[in-house]
Length: 234
Image (cartoon, rainbow, N blue to C red; front, side, top):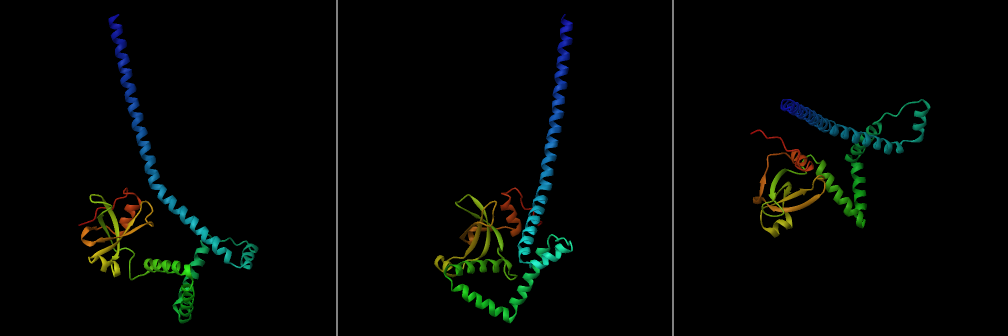
């Protein structure tokens, strides 16, 4: 009886070990499948979202430009069963903007631009909005200046807490005269939307300049610190 009990106990022990090994194999297989799933999402999601946004943007431009095309052209296309090529509206818009830019660069265009601006600046509320938008677009599209020059670290909102900031320019004018110190205009973006934030004036000596580019800094902010800038070569 004792011998049979020992054999039975040994069989139960072997079965238990086998079940634990099978469970470990399935857990390992499950963790690998989970890792592959997340890897697939990380690889495909950014590409898919980018192409989807580009697709929506192109068709939105096509619909907007399509409203400006004369009805006779639409009738001509439908009569001969000519399909509307996706992205044609974007090409038309780019060509139209180039034509407007060429016209605005000429003498007659500059005259009408000056006349239009003079009229807009006479309007109470619209003048402020137009002036702000014009300064923003001139800043971002100018070849002579950059929106942000460098990325810095600074202690904000109190000592011991560090934050990324983007230097727009040196502080000048009345602010510099009142503070009587070498200051920097620094834009502090919010995560994950870097287009919103706030402007602060910081003494230059209280900032630490980083080697990362502005693009790397923006990616770092947008990702919430997940996408770290690659290690810079010395």
